[in-house]
Image (tube, rainbow, N blue to C red; front, side, top):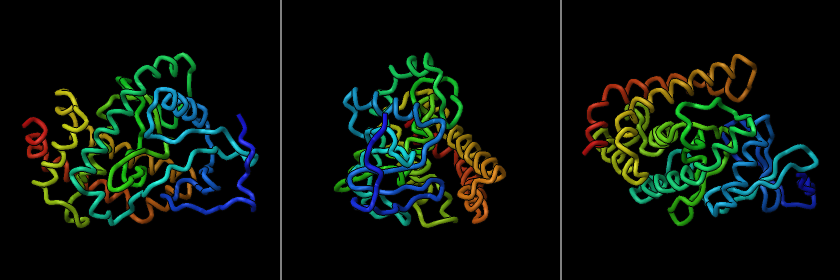
Length: 270
């Protein structure tokens, strides 16, 4: 499918801020982004979500004449660090949990289709494949309106996997499970309370709660490995992340989650 607008001078065009991994522009009421081998799978997923009536994701409209994918611009606010108070409220945290649950539930029947089509994803499938994971649920990929999360964006890293693989990473980003010695954030006791709130809003099952903290650590280890692999392969965006010490930041947080596992688990099983 080809979208005819090219984002030329007749349109209102703006370069959007991002994480330095992809070049993103707004052209009128659309967003244009670079494509990859995973783009057909992502567009099929977004089409499925639209057909299922899930409104928490942009719709895809093929590619433009410049070879960029064309997506709906989802109106609202995407918070950046330091996060504003409204993005750190209990209501916002619970809303993200519910939105993530709705997204996962809408993908369950897409798994068999994806497998039969032998789709290519950015990341390999994680076992057990229960849903399609977003792969990067974080404040910078969440659109808010009036302090409420209404949509996720940037589905490039979507891939089949277990629910908790996505839930654990989202919890890391939104609770957040960051060592307070690295940045101003909630104390550990409050992190634990918020972690329990997030798991409850998602309605995470007992098995998911049992492995959530361990999965969060595994997910961060996965992120650090990926950053180094991409940097070694010449990807400038990931190379800049490694150069500024993002990998060291995540390793400190891995140790933080392990060190306080008992209090985190007590909040998850209360």
